[in-house]
Image (cartoon, rainbow, N blue to C red; front, side, top):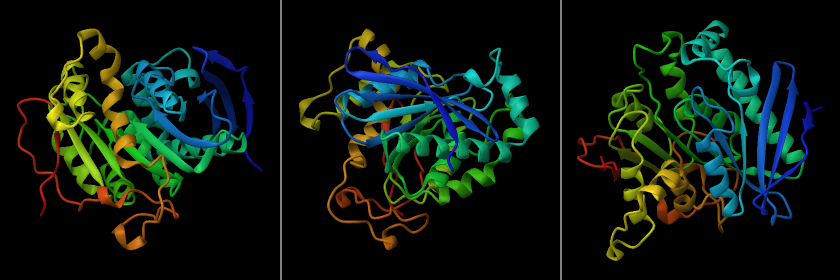
Length: 332
């Protein structure tokens, strides 16, 4: 029998999206969550799982912005509060406080628990007729990647694409050392063979570049992209918007620079949404991907993707970029 769940009353947002909060009652604790569903959708469909960053929650601006963008494309989105975040703990904890709580429980135990929370969430939303269990995407940066790696493995083969980044096998001295689990992160990455978009801040002071590149190279995906942007862990938004404005147009059309207000509103979500557009993973295509096409990790369970977009897996050996850009790793 599945976990018990309680639902809130539906809220209509801007006339075209239903926001529904829920609370799953698991034996290991309660899981507060929210799902955003396009009103026009009449049957179960694609669902993207949104993992928030450290000291955030499921209603953080990055999460709600991404949910709105997905909803506009007819895709449902769901987010749950991370361990010792949001409605799981009162009052709100500082970085050092929530890290100490995770360290006290043990990082492996917390990773397993969060992966189980996401599995329970997908089961609940599937049973409710909202999601297709075999048609999932995952998006999460920083702490969202920390917990997303184990979750993507636990949800396989249902997760068809993922956006990770701003996280790696190394961290700054300011972070609690008990949260370090590089071997587990690399092992999880080696089991993930779905198309990946990885967001790298080139001068990240929280998770150094070398550790992020090591994690990127560990993914077993034959289709993966690393997008590098100048700046630290919390970057200025302008370069991201300027870069991505051109990625949505043919090269010959030129690069249109958004206004400062447009940059502020859109830059924190646009680059991650690119993964869903490029990989075509939320739109089934004819044919399947054979096990041989992925050297490691689970098969995709008969769900196909555009074979034209395959690329050989290779190590990332970039040079430092003068400005924000998309990086395509060299062939070995």
